[in-house]
Length: 182
Image (cartoon, rainbow, N blue to C red; front, side, top):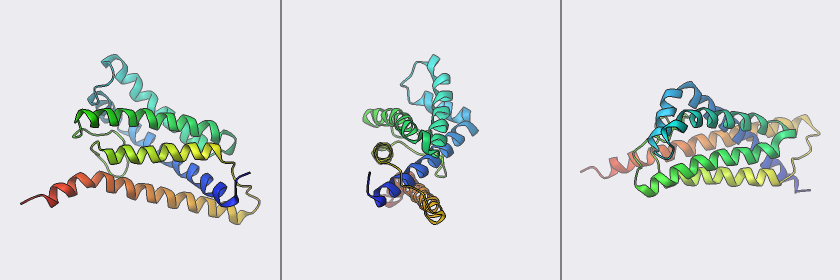
């Protein structure tokens, strides 16, 4: 059994990433034509696979995200979520290596259109690592209502931190352009 603090933090992070995955899936499906165009713009899939992939990825994200909220499915959901994020991250990294950074990542979210970057790759890699840790660490026993409330508040705080970090990653290229103006 993991120490209570580690188990608690791991569970809060799993819930937070579950909420992030659900929100990301919702954004992709809400503006599906834009997401489909972003997937096509990566130029990694044959045109016949763009539509199925752009439908399947957000559905997998949503299923993993919802399942991360449920203790009974948390471990499997962590691995499915890590795989979904990993596939997207591989596409991002491939395009960054190719120098194709001025395309929309298709990530959705409050930051809107986001260019590809190594910072985006690193952000996603952190999520994958955290999901792996979450799958490996037992959840804390929630024997008091206070612990349950604290867990939810902690998860929401992690979501807020993720949103802030994502906004910083999204704005970095624009800030660099502003800083380098004559």
